Image (cartoon, rainbow, N blue to C red; front, side, top):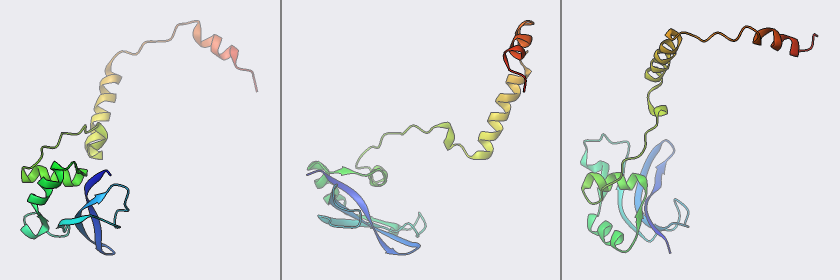
Length: 134
């Protein structure tokens, strides 16, 4: 039975609150779970200690049994110093739009400054002749 450490959503519409649970990976997100080991309230400021509560002893015990944390839980465990999360590849599309546009325009300007290669003299008439007249 593949066991995961993940968040189960609670709270109301537009007011999220998450329970951190140990669950079978085949169970629904908000459905059956084995054990509740903490909570996460994303609406609180990051500096408040009530934002995240985890029973670290239970987390260590479940990880020793083979439970796999989700990406978000892995971030919490990395901050707590229990596990080290690997850096992920952050592609260029993750750069904010204004900065990305400025880089693209700079690249186009640099490419435009390079001398353009003129097509061969005989290529243009041949291309026109290949197209039928409408």
